Length: 82
Image (cartoon, rainbow, N blue to C red; front, top):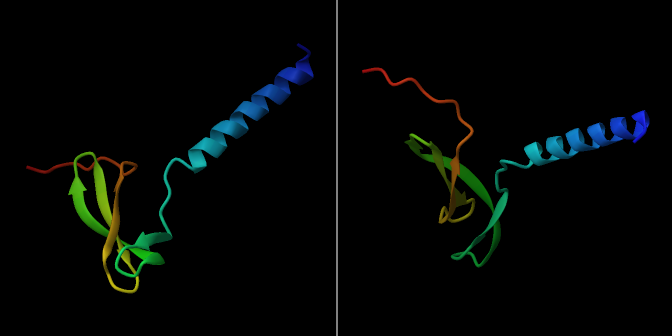
């Protein structure tokens, strides 16, 4: 390999890693609501604070029906005071 080829490979690998990191966690903007029978905008509400992450519930913006949940594992560990 030539020196310029090595540089291109390194930048290509870092670009792939950056793309993968940007889509590791995402929030839904619309989900299917069984009550409204269509895809609707959703609101995200904190449901539980768990040791392995925060559990969120997605609610229909029109009828407030629960349409899904998500556990966000990216939060920083909290210190428990006893």
